[in-house]
Amino acid sequence: MDVYYFYSYGTAAWMALQAAPMIASPTMIMALLSPEVREPSTLEIYFSRQLGFALLAIGALNILLTGSVPLSSRLSEGATTSATDPKAPYALPTLTITAFFHAALAFYGYTMWTETGVFSFGLGTIGSGFFCAIAMWCILFASSDGRISRKTGADKRTSGFPFKNNQAHSELKKGR
Image 1 (cartoon, rainbow, N blue to C red):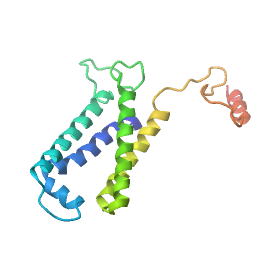
Image 2 (image 1 turned 180 degrees about the horizontal axis):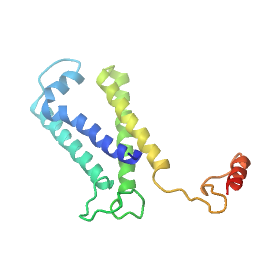
Image 3 (image 1 turned 30 degrees about the horizontal axis):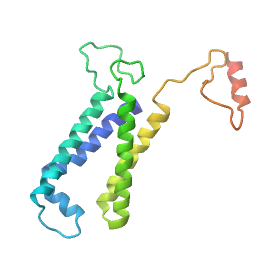
Image 4 (image 1 turned 90 degrees about the vertical axis):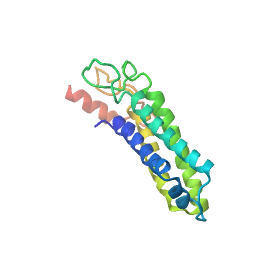
């Protein structure tokens, strides 16, 4: 499975995992995150369930907008995430927005974990940080095809700054 699709489905699964207890039992969430055990108010229950449903919607939109699920009735060679692919025109913007989302959640979870010491915030920090790192990797390395030189076989986007790799260029020339 491509790393990009792993990220897309993993993000949706992580959001669904976070949404399930918010929808099913807001009382349990209050007991995990609050220093004193008390019954949640009606407003807290409302906001907890609304946030749970919003996370489910964002996870579903993430899968649909990244092109992981083909939205056309015609099946072709397979889904790709290139910029010219008509099935995934919003793949890179969706990836970027969800990367910022995971970064913000990881930062907020870390600040709450260091302030309160509640282990649940630490777990959220680890999960969101993991998906933020995968998203950043996908943005940097998996978002576009390399431009391979026909003459040398090397990627044209690489530079020689600050050191030139003459050995690699000579090995590529010998192999051709």
